[in-house]
Structures are given as C-alpha cells and as structure tokens.
Length: 334
Image 1 (cartoon, rainbow, N blue to C red):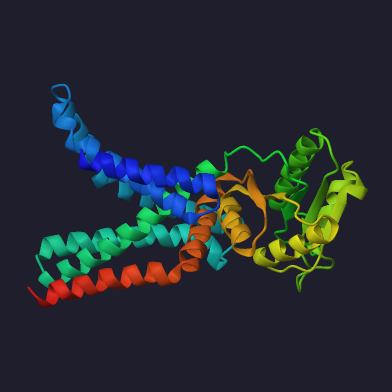
Image 2: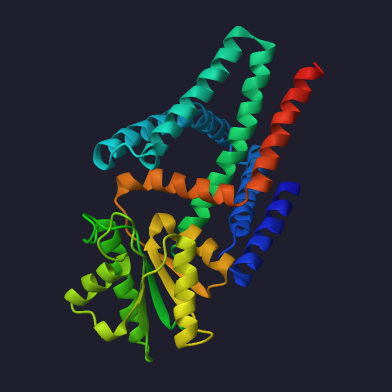
C-alpha cells in the first residue's frame, strides 16, 4: 500500500510539473519514479492475484532481467556497426556500439565476481552496478518523457516557427536530416497560418568553416524553391550552436513582435533537449520533432542523453560519486 501512495505522490508532482512547464527534466524523473513505485506495489500485491499468476510473473521477470541486457547489448552493438558503415567513424556515431560493449563488460565483470567469489571483485561489480543502475534509470526517464513530450499537441497561439539548422552537404546543399526538419516546419507553419493571423518561419543556422553560405540561407532557398512564400521567411544566420539558435532567433522575434511565442522544429531525437535549452534561455516555445531514420535514433538518443546528464553534472556526478564512496566504505568495513 505504501508503494502505491508514493507512486501517487510522484504522479501528482509529475502532473503539476507538466502544467507549470512541460520543458523540465524533473517531469521525466517524477514520471519515472511514479512508474517504478507503481511496479513495486503491483509486485508486492501479486500474491493476492489468481493462482499461478505470481509464478508466471516471476518467470517473465527473471527472463527480462537475465536475457534483456544481453539482447539489448547485442542490438546496440549491431546498430553501432551499421552506424559506422552508413555515417562513418566519427565519435558520435560510435555511441551505440560503445554502450553495447560497455554493457557486455559490466555483465562480464559481474559473472567473474560470482564465479571467483572474490570479495574485492564483488564490491567493484556491485558498485559498478549501482552507478549503471542510476544512469540507466535516468536514461529510461529521459526516453520515456521525450516520447510523451514529442506527442503533445502544438500550441495554438504561436507567432513564429523556428527550424534549427544541422549542417550542409558539400558546403551548400540541404541534407536529408535537415530537409526533414524543414518539411515538418512547413507543415507546422501551414497549420498555424490556417488558424488566422500572420505567421513567420525562421530558418536558424550560421555559416560553418566548411560551408559556402550560412545554413539559414540554404534552408530558406530549399523552402522557397518548393513554393513556400519568400516574404514569410526570416533568416537567422549568426548561430553556431543550439543555444545560439535559440538566443539569436529570440532577438529577431522580439525585434519584430515583442512578447511573441513560437514552435521550434528539430529532429525527434533532439526535441526534448532543445525544449530544455529553450526553457534555459527564456524562449517561449514548444519543440516538435521531425522523423529520423531508425538506424540513426539509438546513437543520437544516447548523445542527447549524455548532453542532458552533463547539463546537471553537479547533481548527477555527485550522486555517482556517493555511490562509489559507499562501495569503498562497504569494502573497508567488511
């Protein structure tokens, strides 16, 4: 019963957080804790269910705990190999492969500690599992809430649509990833324009060292060549990072229409982190995502999570350090 009460409290905190501001990582954590305590409560009450239910659930749970990590690690490794073949050996493209290999490493360490019955190895494995468990919990919170956030209805009163840049091919051509954002941005613009009033679409992206023109100009040309009204496009051509995308686009909006709101368009894997960034810099905007190739999603999502994890590095690294110290304390006192 206690677990259900705790789950209800965290669910209430989640609801209040969403009503106050959808763009809070705390919402993801509250939702994750609510689901966790609800699951604990259901497991504690399972004996009261029909005959055979508890045995079936326990078998399924053991299969998930035993085989789930192995299957997931294998899938991540396979995805990492595919990423390297399709996108090259850049560090960002190796994340799913490294995550899969890391999972196999932790499993190997745990098995070695069990087989050897080594006290020191057991404490190292236990401490590692605590840290990995904490990080994994946050990752699941991130993925779960990002999924929900990406499916929230678009606000009705936005004056601007901001499309974030992502680099050009050959220094001047819009790549498929960016084209997906632009097509989604056009859909959002047309939906808002159909509700009445004058809307504007901001293409946001400066010129990189290997680019022949600013990303925003190539983005605007892509839209205009496909029939989008040129007078509805505003080009923000100074930004180099997502934070600068937000800040410089905000300057343009405030100069034209002080106090205006917006819908920000990026790829779906980037939407929740972009929303956190918008909140941080004070942009009044909801973020929506455009489709991304399935093979690209795991590494991109891991990259986004790492960035969010480090955004709150004082808390997260502090908790990880406490878990490590608890492991050493346990080793010293036994």
